Amino acid sequence: MKIVVIGGSGLIGANIVNRLRANGHEVVAASPSAGVNTITGEGLAEALQGAQVVVDVANSPSWEDQAVLDFFETSGRNLLAAEAAAGVEHHLALSIVGTDRLPENGYFRAKVAQEKLIKASKIPYTILRATQFNEFVEGIVNSGDEGGTIRLSPALIQPIAADDVSAVLADLAVGTPVNGTVEVGGPDRFPIDELARKFLATRGDTREVIADVHARYFGSELDDRSLVTGEGAIIAPTRFQNWLNRPSAR
Image (cartoon, rainbow, N blue to C red; front, side, top):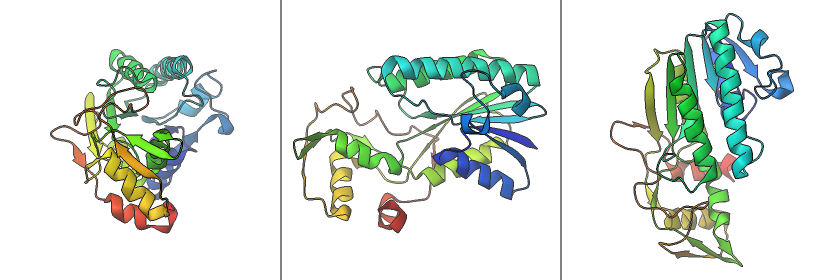
């Protein structure tokens, strides 16, 4: 099976490429550095020629509200049009749990726009919504820093290892399109402030963490449903504490 991974050189993309190649699939790791650009269209038709499946894990180079929206809308339109022309049979895209619950977050709004384009196309599809990656916890913690004190929401978060997300995507890529959305999350749920304390303790970081129900998470106030999976979600195997103890997490 020929599978094209858009964003194939990134954290998730490179992992998926390696997994699929190990299982004997013909895989194209598509990215601007490899001459495939979904914004300009460069190399897109050539990369998709003969492909049965496209996995889209590309990310915007900018997280500014308008820039990220423009990226996902332009990339999505160009990619889906090229897939239709090439006869692609399955479009698989990575999104985020909670995108439709946090409209104040510009990145989440952009992912909702991307999802709408996928659903409106005639290409069979699967959307995988994942919870926040373990690899992003440091950024989440530092986002609450106010002069050496960290103020974070006590709402629940359900972190997942990027490797586990990649495994699920690689499995979905060779399966039947569900024409719907699948959720995946880690096995643990913590209040965000508690997660921060665990992370900082492992790093020997002595900054104080204060729980504040009004603390904003990248622009949004949260509740205990905002960032966690619903019923029927795939639960990944890697516990946060085990991931945190690995040398690679440090």
